[in-house]
Amino acid sequence: MHDVLPGKSVHWQYLEQTIQALVQSYGYREIRFPIVEKTDLFKRTIGEVTDIVEKEMYVFDDRNGESLTLRPEGTAGAVRSGVEQGYLYNQIQRLWYIGPMFRYEKPQKGRYRQFHQLGVEAFGMAGPDIDAELILLSNRLWKTLGLEGLRLEINSLGSAEARNTYRTALVEYLTQFQAELDDDSQRRLSTNPLRILDSKNPSMQEIIEAAPKLADYLDEESKAHFDGLCDLLNAAGIEYSVNPRLVRGLDYYGKTVFEWVTDQLGAQGTVCAGGRYDGLVEQLGGKANSAIGFAIGLERLLALLEDNNKLPEIARPDAYFALVGDEAVRLGTVLSERLRDVLPALTVLVNCGGGSFKNQLKKADRSGANVAIIMGDDEADSKSVIVKYLRDGQDQKTVSFDELIELLQANEI
Picture 1 (cartoon, rainbow, N blue to C red):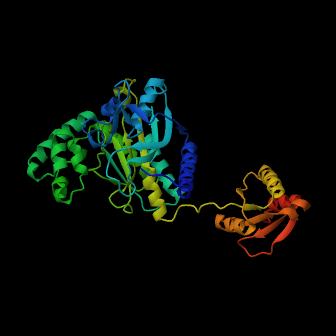
Picture 2: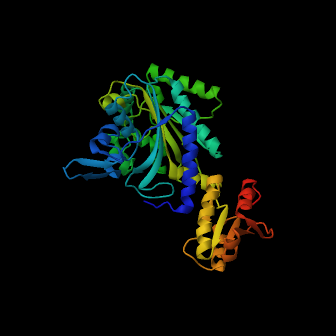
Picture 3: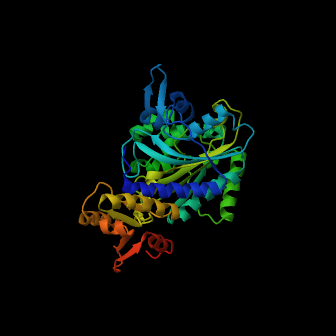
């Protein structure tokens, strides 16, 4: 778990503001829900035999002995909120959220135990058009941020019945090679065999490659849905590849699943992942409802932006007030507020805590300000200031308070 220091928080603000503007332009509205939920929520939704529930959740008992969990992902909380508050039934909802999630796993580049996610969720739309919209939205985010080289992978997991039939065939096939499976895969063989297809273990790739394909077991409705999605992506000019091994790690997914991946982040190549979870609302006690969403890990996305030099420079203050003497401090404090009234976008740093002119001008230079606005006893008596240019080598000048405001308004300082 990491602190975000002032030099980095500006990058977070840039990313969050970019995301907010984009999702709102598509008609999505923000939802905020608790960081702590009942543990049973995640067991019921994510699945008790998933790595998240078995190994990674932060679980604790409260003072009443109720088991609570720091949220490891956002979809379950969004659906729980919708069912409890009644805003999903017979309604179309487009929602988004940003916030911290928690998983106890091995920290590495772009993956931390407290991490932050953007989540985008859509409810009440059964067709492939909303699947395409979410993919197009995520694609527009990459373009807005100036990122290139991300690859879209898609797949269909079909209906629950189709997956159950496929699961039986997959287990029968993999059992022949049980002695050759690694420890994780042997455990998953009896609990979550589809996850074996996602194994990155080089020694198992030949076995996985020859395994039965889920596409051969899809029901007709899922095939038609997936074909409709592909048609829409083709029409929109979105490049993609069908990855039959893309299964996602959460139990609630069905039909469409997708990931945006990159080769620039080492082992943590997935930047955005999502899919359909049409049965989850009913599973949590609501009326049956179509649903799809995706999540983006913001630490991972920021690492990608940094590697590609796509983050903005840290903003520098426009002016630094260097004030020596009681009257100069009094007048300088009032004058700086006048400047903020007239020019709200102006960034003004006022020296606080005293110090000599030499010391204050060193601080002004280190701050990165364009100019130092200097006031001592003489300037306070004449209601003027000295404007010292710190960046472009212009000669300093003495101006009245009103002239200073006029110069700043005219962008001549």
